[in-house]
Amino acid sequence: MIDVKKLSKSYKGVEVVNIPEMHIAKGESYGLVGNNGAGKTTFFRMILDLIRPSTGEVLSKGVNVQNNEDWKYYTGSFLDESFLIDYLTPDEYFEFIASLHNYSKGDLQEFLNQFDDLFNDEIRGKKKYIRDLSKGNQKKVGIVAALMGNPEIILLDEPFANLDPTTQIRLKEILRKLKKEKDVTLMISSHDLSHVTEVCERIVLLEKGKVQKDIQTSETTLKDLEDYFTA
Ligand SMILES: Nc1ncnc2c1ncn2[C@@H]1O[C@H](COP(=O)(O)OP(=O)(O)OP(=O)(O)O)[C@@H](O)[C@H]1O
Image (cartoon, rainbow, N blue to C red; front, side):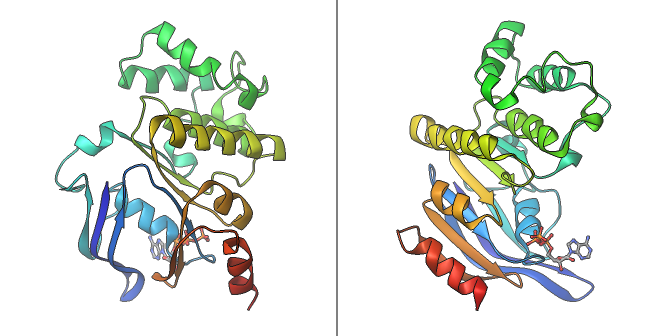
């Protein structure tokens, strides 16, 4: 699904990402962990062609993401609030994103109804602009919008941060269901080692832009990661 080749990014001569090679298979759930500044967001931004690599390339289904827009039709993502349009209400924003996916009004209602529990009556039908929502509720809007249009791959940066425990549990269920029922490829960066090891079958650990671990999740992974970050 995604192939990374000789990928690096430097700012003012300082290298912040250096990944010589990486393959992310279709249907894989991939968790990216690493301390602040490890390069997680920068890596995701290069996959989404939001920033240009200093060297190398990212291929989505074999095509360089810089040269072709096709990947945008099957890729859902939410990295931060800049993905939102904060002067719209959530309903207006969902309608806008739905129009990009050619959803009818009925399609949109049906799609959003699935997330009633997650929204907890705080998001739809309110006359509040996105900018006036709490951080957690903004995140819910962004994540749900990223799931619209049946994406084949979904990238989420810190999806669990700012969410209350109930929502974290619901989000984990949603992500697991997407993988199981729709074979969606998931790429999640997270500081929450417990959630990310629960959802992801593969964990990649970045440190100073370089891959330190690339492992299949097992019963010992959470403990191994905790030990790594404690040392
Ligand atoms: N536009 C930029 N100009 C200069 N340096 C940058 C820029 N964007 C990112 N960096 C640097 O690149 C490094 C990696 O940042 P990045 O945001 O990718 O890390 P991260 O792993 O996502 O961190 P966090 O867990 O804190 O979100 C950091 O040292 C950051 O300061």
